[in-house]
Amino acid sequence: MPKIQQGLSKKSIRRLFIARNFAALALLVIFYWFESYAGNQTFNFLKQLVFLWLTLAAIQIIYFRFTQPTTNQIFIQLTADLLFIGFIVFGSGGLSSPFIFLLGLVIITAGSQAHVLLTLTTTVLAAATYLLAIYAFEDIRHIVIEPESTVKILLQTSLFFLTGGIMALIASRHTKLQEKEQLTSIKHEQLKAIHGQILDVMHEGMIILDANLSIQTFNPSAATLLGLSPQHTGFKINSFVQVPEHLSDVSENIDIPIIQHEVKHNQHHLLLTFKKINIEGDTVWLMTIVNTTETRKLERQIAEQDKLAHIGQMAAMLAHEIRNPMQTITQAAELMGLNQENSTLEHIVTDEISRLNRLVSDMLDYANPLHPNPKPTNLKSVIQTSIQRVDLSQSLAIILNSDNANINVDPDHIRLILDNLLRNAIRVSPNPASISVTFSILDTGWKLLVRDHGEGINEQIKNSLFQPFKTGHQHGTGLGLATVYQVCKVNQWQVFVDTDITDGACFIVECNMSTTHNEGDKVNG
Image (cartoon, rainbow, N blue to C red; front, side, top):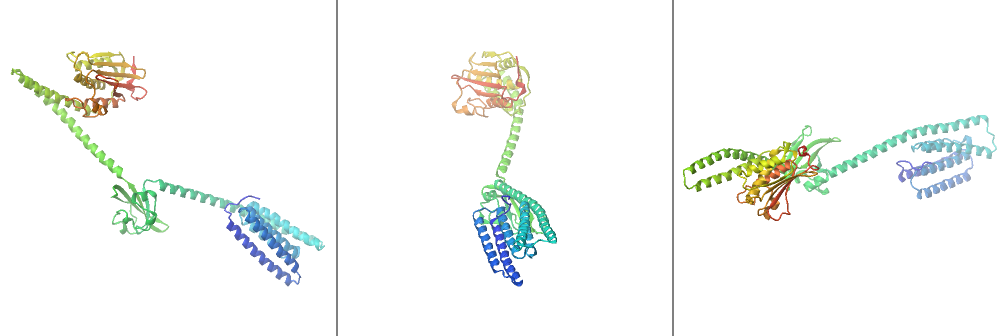
């Protein structure tokens, strides 16, 4: 017999047991009335039937107590029924017994359990019980079975098997339907579990409100955002957060679009969205809550950045326009100094104008958008040009140590870096041959060093050396090293200070081919 049937429970088996025993008791009463009506003395056989009924019931109770609900328990009950009915058929006339049809009812009962093998097994046992009861009765009574009786037995047995076959077919279809129903139920439970998990992990709050805007259910995010607890079910939503005043005035018959409302709640900006939906004929509100605090913060930051960008553009334009008048003022001051024996005033004017000019140049360099335009460049030639520009009189005797190689870089960007680093070095190392520039080719790229022997870098600005407007010099603008850092960043180069230097400073610009994506850094020897 099969081990277990889907959906079987102790409760269903108990109901079947009780129903069968009530039917058996009714059958005993009917049997007693039938035999009494026929004038037969059946008291001894009736006592035997009652004893058999009680014995079978006790065996079933003991078996059920120590086993789990399985198809075997149903099979035991049906087998007990067949045995009980077989004795009744034997005691009520064998082939002429009016209780033979009860065997068919047992087959139908087996088929109602939606188990094909149980139905077929019960059918075989019912036919065997029928034949055993009939032939036992005829043998004890020494009655010879006539040919027409044999035909009746054959037809009756065939009827049992026909009933069993039909019930097995019904059981098979019922089993398939039951399996589909169970599969659908499992999928439904899975979807329900997934839906619950999604609601639990959602960052957005979700609340179901009835037509009167009372809270029906909510997810954990909504509880966190509004401070809700399970005890708040049934409370008005406007007790916890401000909602649009016209929301409750909307007619149930009007299909409105989504209503959105943004409020400030406990230092947070919340976007509330309301949508009217129908669930099983009832009108409810679906309310979602999105925390827009970070979004609003980003919007303010972007607005401030846009404002600063516009100010930067205005400053760059202003610096560019200031440049031309300063050149004119410088020339005028020089001409004025030709007619004066004391040129002190003229030197003061020209020095201050030169200082303003450096400031304007640094601002324009820093504000100018940088877009690398790499091309084959001889770095040694670029370095020599930069040295000549910053030391026109060659009084500083800047030392150059450079490999002669062509690399694909933007020469203007290299010049911008060198001009700023050399200008800082000259400011702190005015002595001849105290500044050196070294360029070397590495296995993974190249390295550029600018070394001076000045007073070194102030400890107070070491950590903010490449930030704008951070300078350790009295006449510095604080934009030179910031510009160097900006140029290196867009070209994916590294710039840093050699911390092992004890006198002066050494700035290093390094290109590593393994970490850069810039095709303009390839070296051709």
